[in-house]
Every structure is written in C-alpha cells, then in structure tokens.
Length: 252
Length: 304
Image 1 (cartoon, rainbow over the protein chains, first blue to last red):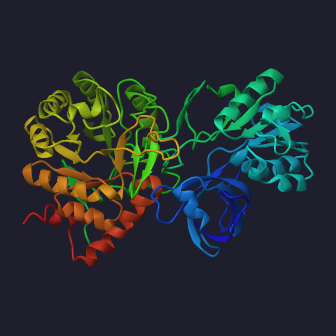
Image 2 (image 1 turned 135 degrees about the vertical axis):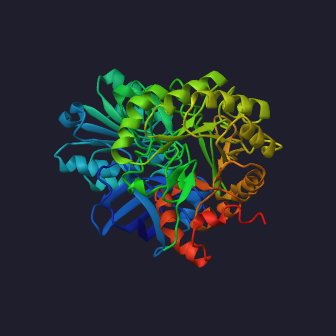
Image 3 (image 1 turned 180 degrees about the horizontal axis):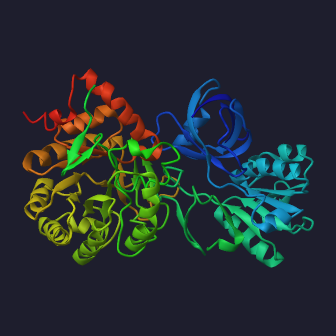
C-alpha cells in the first residue's frame, strides 16, 4: 500500500508525529500497527498507530521514536513523499472480548514513553462506547513528555509521572496509579519492566487487562517466527497473535 | 507466449519460483495476500520430530541489503504438521508441496522424512543439513561430506519421493559436500542456506541477537549464492534449486543461467509479502526482454 506523508513533525528531540493519507481500511482496531518501508533500509519498521480515520481515502497518524538508523531516516522524510506500508497488522486492543473488557466501565490506560501513542486511539474508542477512562502517562523526564494535550483535549482525567520527578508524580506509572480513582480494567503499552509492574498492580487490585508488547520482528505478519514469546497457552507471535496479550495468558 | 515451466524430479512446475523454507510458514499467512496456487510450489517451515520453541529473542537483526535470523527451527513437530498444518494447507493449496526436514541425529532425519514422505501432498523432501541456528544438529551435518552422505543415505532408504539436500555455504568446499550427497543417492540439491553473520548494538555494546550469531540472508548474499550454485551445478548431474538473495525475475534468470533448475525466494517474502507473485508476474516480460522462449533452455547457460 502506498501512502502519502502529509506531515512529519518533531514533538520532542527524538519523538516525531507523522500523518499519512491513503487507503486505511485495513486498520480495524486500536493497538494494531503498521510496517513502514523506510527508503534505503531492508526490513520494514513496525510502528504503532496513534489515531486513524478508516476510509479508502483515509488518514493515519503515527507517533514514533527515532531510536536507530531506520527511524532516524524516517524522521527526515519530507511531506509529500510516498511510503510503502503494510497496515492493520496485529490483533490490537479488543474492547468486546474478553467479557471483562466489555463489562468494564472505568478502564485505566497506562502508557510508558513511546508506548503512549496507541492508547490515544484506544481512548477515543472507549469514550465513543460511553466508558469513562483515566489515563496515566509515564516518562523519564519532563522533556520526554508527549501527547498530554491530546488526552486532556478528550477531557479524560490524565495523570503524569516522571522517573526524575521533573513533572507530575515522581516515580513510575504504578506510583501514579495509586493516586487514580477506582478502575475495573487496564489497557497498557510501554517498556517490558513497566508492563511487568502493571501486571503486578492488576494482580494486587484483582483486575484484568490487555498488555501491548514489543519485539524485534522481520515480517510483521506471522511468517518468520522472529518475534515469538511464551504464553500460558503455548508460543505466540507478537506480530500476529499479539502485540496485545491478556493478563491471564502472560508468562514473564 | 514464453514457457516458464520447469520440471523438478519428474514433477512439472508452472514456473521455477518457490518460497524458501522458514519464510512462508505453512502458507497460511500468505493466502490473505494472494492466491498461492500461482507459485511453482513452496517449501514449508523446517520440521523436526518434536515441537520446538526455538531460540530466545531478539531473533532478528537488520543488515545492509539483508537481515539476520536466529529463529532456531521453531516448529510444532512433525505429528502436528501432519495432523493440522497439512490438512489446512490442502484446503487452499492444490499443488505438491516441498517438505523441509530437520533433525538432531541421522535417525531423527530419517524418521521425520519417512512420516512426511507418506503425505500425499508432499512432492519432494528437502533435507536441511544446514540450519546455522541450532546446536548439535542442522549445520553440523552439512559441513562434513561424510555426515551429509550419512543423512542422505538414511533418508533415501525410507523415502519414495525425491530427496533434495539443502546445503550450507559455511564450508570450505561446497562442491565436495554436494558430490558426497549425490554419491549417497540424493535426487537433487538446494543451496544456499544462510551465511553465518552477526551484528552488535552500539547502544548496549552487545550482540543484537540473543543467540549472538545468526543466518544472513537477503539481496546482499546473491552474488555468493550465485557463485556456489554455478560451481555445484556444474559439478553434479542432479538438479540444483538455487537460492540466496533472489528478489526479482532477473535474479531468477541469472540463477538459472548459473545452473539452477528452479529458484527459491526467501528473505524477500518477509519485506514484501507479494514478492513471489510479483516475480512470477514479471518473469514472462523479463524472458522476452532477454529473448528467452523456453526457460529450461537457459539452465546452466553461463557454463560455456
């Protein structure tokens, strides 16, 4: 699929927001990802979807971190460029299944660093279902903070944490969660140590949740077995059977 | 009308394009992208006696014009393949398939080969004596002519279907190993498997792959593969399936000029799921451009 870049803007020193237009109908759920072919690089780059409008002439916004040569090159792509993209990859967050997700009224959304973006598209869809989500966004330091305005514009209670205390709650997302009101389900995306802490939080509060994982991958559509992980129900491919796993199946 | 068909040990293929083992699963992931019946055939995921999780992650690293993988033969085991994967495959793929057989002992190779040999949809057995990512198996059998011959003989003793031995490039003399397999009764050879390679992260100062090293594939290795196919195909009388970095119809033609009877496409499927479809569709035009009427006419054409 060829998409056209309409915007590629720096949000922080290393995080960029890219908007593309094209046929976006393959994207059906928040938490799915796209594989972008960066000119000059062999493997595609898997990037989460911040938000999208699904249509033959639709649009997609990606918020990504320039973390290596490929994403650094992506950050230099100019508006008007065409990029080859595979879209609608992965299972995404499921708002209907399992039953606990469907029933939950006050979900807690916990994002860490570059794990924050996919929670925005999720948050909008939870609001559209009449749910009352709360967001916790965790970063290392104040200059890393992204997308706070976006969540606040949705009129969603939004708590911030920074590891160095330069803004918001000093500490981790779990420290901020202690200050949040009651919640009955968790959706989370972020670095693995954070996901593990959130997993323990869920256990202590007796709530379930959906956890979006990251792994180095080649194809992104289930063929190469590069991103396999162990679960309680056998091995799964992060790209195809994930990236979202439910609390009940996760093995650390 | 040009003729793209080739024949591999008596079985006719509509075209020489074959997705390589480990890049195409059991076909399932690609049937949503295109009708895979347009392929010559494909070689399914390397199968062992017992199911395997494979190596720890990260298993993938990028290189200039290529990639490393250290998957480590993750597969559900031969019995599961026979009970679940092949019945599923038969629903949407209606051609003979190539069964990729792996093992950690001569006995295991023979046992897995014997089971897959009985499956009606299996047209050929491809015996992988060249996986670089497992310890005590795989490549250990393919880097020594005697071991490669022992696996070949053991499989030939139990198989009725054509047996292709998949060779490793990580050797000093691939021709000697190819000849040992031919002498032991192999019906054909496929080469090359991946080259051993490595990347180190500048951030962590550690190898990118959890396994430290992995198999290098992609367009970067095409000239190496081509040279090995050229040498081996010239030296043996059995057919050779050429592979390694093939990414276009022109690459397919070049491989066949080097002596390949058919051509596998590996890593390119992972960056472009439509790669084989696009290669097959581009092949007739590329043949016309280079004035090739019948593709089989050019096999080994570069030898003279």
